[in-house]
Image 1 (cartoon, rainbow, N blue to C red):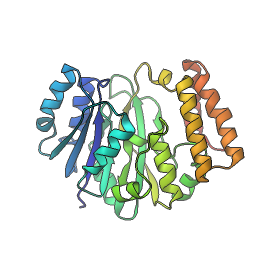
Image 2 (image 1 turned 60 degrees about the vertical axis):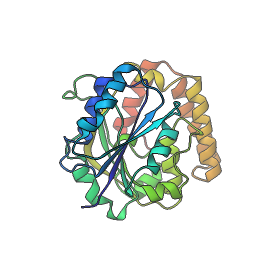
Image 3 (image 1 turned 180 degrees about the vertical axis):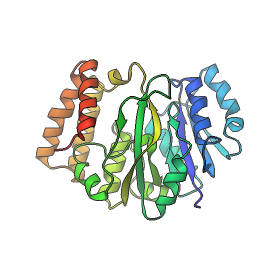
Length: 275
């Protein structure tokens, strides 16, 4: 079985108990434990989070832990870009500091990485009790389907992907020109010929807090959407018509009330959000 790293970033806004549970889920809970965990501390942390950080090596045991402290908060894209350089292995699994990886996640994904650069999976939303799930976010599985929907939406669930470090670096790495750094990275990788797939299994429980749908809207997110769409057009991922269509649809989504946004998002995910 191939060696692999897990890459996670934590910042001052994360919840200590959720962070602890996330660490446990990527280490001692796993049927196939990682060869290395790279944990980026993205700027100063409040005392409750620092306490969990001090215990992180014990929580993650027996998995080797590499802690990468950043003096200032850099944001997720830059934190992941720095953390990637500390990953000892070419196969890197992403994980977030408030989500829960299912015990079978790495045992299912890692053996499939021999001929892939990106491998995603389905995720299930939950709010408080991880035993009670809401929306399941499933995505197209085959490479042709993934490339087909790329101009329209992100074809991967970022917290559930496994990536090849070399392929990420070849595509230019995580770029913070937009708040949708994962979509932009995947677009550049696929445009450059990356080998891609999704598996249908739910492998991550994705925590959705009370403000999740509020954070997806507003003028800042509209601006980020515009930056992403311009970049996608410049790269040649989208046509001019697709760019303006995306801005009309996705831009409107950013500005409608949060409850309407939530309802539309759930409806779109259930129908596959295709052309």
